[in-house]
Length: 126
Image 1 (cartoon, rainbow, N blue to C red):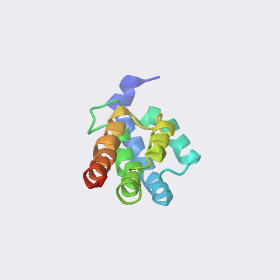
Image 2: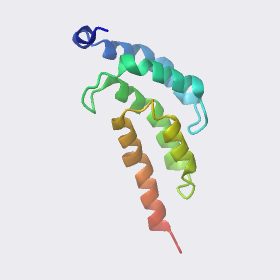
Image 3: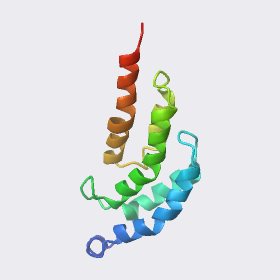
């Protein structure tokens, strides 16, 4: 409703600092790729306030996701996910599509999924 005021007063930055700790605590208990409707719903609702459309590295919403949700997801993908069974990651990305802006989806694919797929291909013994 007031986009210029939101930008001038950096409401997204202030709001993200207020929700960071509760989100971080909730994300620590979250088991990636398990359905977590309350966490996903809270992020979907807060996206309109926190996502300011800024550049990829400075958007408060993208930074918040990277430091909380993506941190936990990265731990799972790097240490538990079996790349020969991609369905669970594909399903996760489909179900959480509204939560992640394109920069966050690119980060997940480029920095988490693709390296694991490359390693699986390199280690493949036909």
